[in-house]
Length: 155
Image (cartoon, one colour):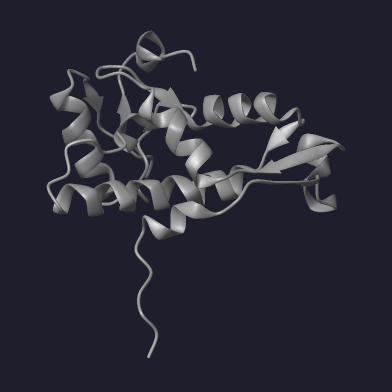
């Protein structure tokens, strides 16, 4: 019988640099792409101060620059954000005080992430607690942070 791996253990993957896959060249062109380490993403999120926000795009651009590549893989970045969020919730259940504030990460258009633990409802609750106004989603779009651009933090 397999033992279940904790979310924190899933954070320990190594970063890799690969050629941009052919199916992604239309979007990104040719060159090198970073498959990020969850811990690289985690470090960046931990720098986001209370009341501030960061977009997934900002994280991807910062990591691409750090590793000297053209782009950071958007798919794995999204997957690793979910792992980071689940690990943070695991830590909160253990009453740990220093957790990664994953709820401060929003999509590039200011919308909330339905794949985070507790869905957009929990992310919205945490952001409201930090003073943000959340606009309700319309036409199947998730809620978003009002005037999110004013709260973006440089990474």
